[in-house]
Image (tube, rainbow, N blue to C red):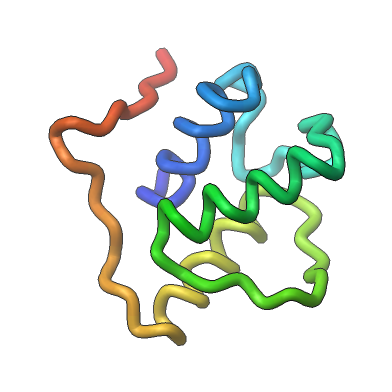
Amino acid sequence: MTNTLERLRVFLVKDYKRQPERLTFEAPLDSLGIDSLGTVELRWTIEDTFQIKLPPEPVALPNLADVVRYIDALMVSQAVAPVRPSAAEPVLRVT
């Protein structure tokens, strides 16, 4: 599992109360049940967490794997160093 997916999973579970076992690469975004306000908040959280700027125009991202690839590509294109969780950040472990 990528570090990007792990970090996404942490705040989707914590802030959006999603079940961790449903947050796989194949999980369709529309199955997460995040409303339009939640989507705006999610954008802000992604920008803050990954230190990137998301473009204002919508992008088709059908599943979490697409979101991970998109975030990783933006980090590269915006020359952001990979984000590694600090010891103080919670890390979600699904067993």
